[in-house]
Length: 83
Image (cartoon, rainbow, N blue to C red; front, side, top):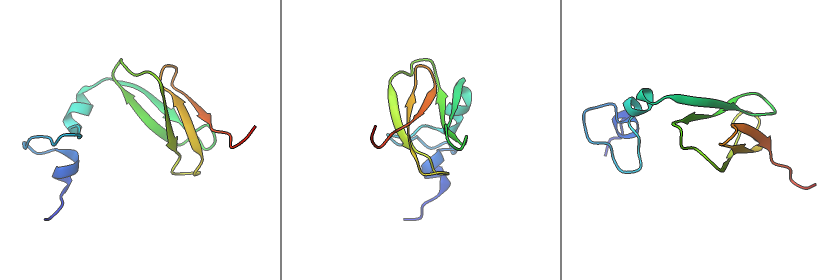
């Protein structure tokens, strides 16, 4: 089976598969914030919509450090290995 960008980004008129969001749907949503890595300042996360709350963890692709992001305040925190 040949893989195309249509499968991943759903830019065609085909139905969007379960677990995916159409790129055109994201472009119609209001961008709430961009959260950057506290160490290298690379953008880690784009937040859309108004109902975001809680924490998520991501690894920065630029510096490789684990980062916790508070979605309520859009604050990025470096995760300490031990204190």
